[in-house]
Length: 165
Image 1: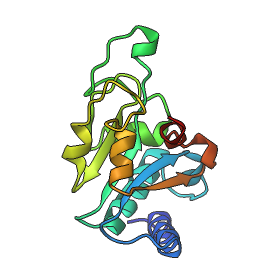
Image 2: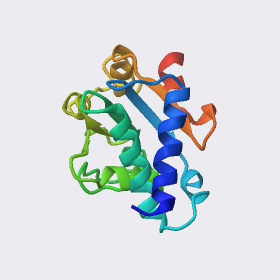
Image 3: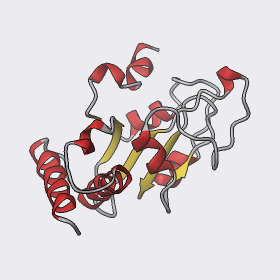
């Protein structure tokens, strides 16, 4: 591991600890790649993997990491393939979606990708309402997930639409 990767991992661990997160938590992460740009010494994709590895390591085997992988395919009259349609909401979400062991649900507008102990449950969420009680956002609510903005403000957190509904 390079010094930059070590520094990034430590910064993630320190931040999650200060925010009082614990192993076993479920996190819904909205992100911006600007976060990893501040750590010199490696390519962006490497730093993104390092960030994701650090979060998953912190959450431990009982934790779950969920990221939006929204494609808005249905609204664009495009076919949606949960395995191959790219995320349109950022570089970190696309890297996460493509990682081994990460699963994605089949929502053609507001899909998510998940890793960890509850990933199968998250991947099987399929609702007729984007923000209803049986939607991915309803499951995040039932799981008492924490909403995390990593390099982005809270106004980018889509969960607010679930609350509005």
